[in-house]
Structures are given as structure tokens and as C-alpha cells.
Length: 68
Image 1 (cartoon, helix red, strand yellow):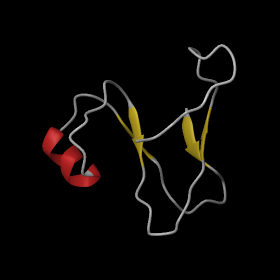
Image 2 (cartoon, rainbow, N blue to C red):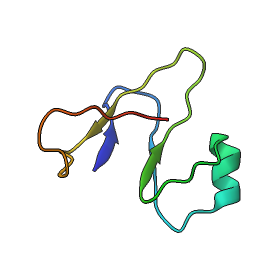
Image 3 (cartoon, helix red, strand yellow):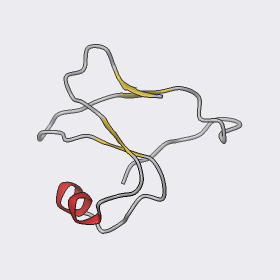
């Protein structure tokens, strides 16, 4: 489960497959397609957001989640 922080006004959206490639490219500006589920949000300049998730089962110890 992925969620926004309670007080955040930026909405994260979860996407699943099959993916509409043309829509994805127009919304994100990238040609790199995700392999499975993905999360996306739209931020204004200078705006930030926090994404909260349940434990990620494939991570055994400390890890860093990055976004491209």
C-alpha cells in the first residue's frame, strides 16, 4: 500500500499494467517504461511531497528508494 502523508496536498497515483505508452510519455516526459506497478505525482516548482509505504518485502536491511 502506498499513501500520501495525511497533511500533504499532493496526490500520488498508482499505475498498473497494461500501460498506455502514449499517455505515460505525455504525462511524464520519459521514454523509460516501468516493468510493473508504479507511482507518479505532479509537483509544482518548489513543491515537495512524502510518500509513505508499507515494508518492501524484498529489502532485508537498510535501503534507499530513488526516483527517476
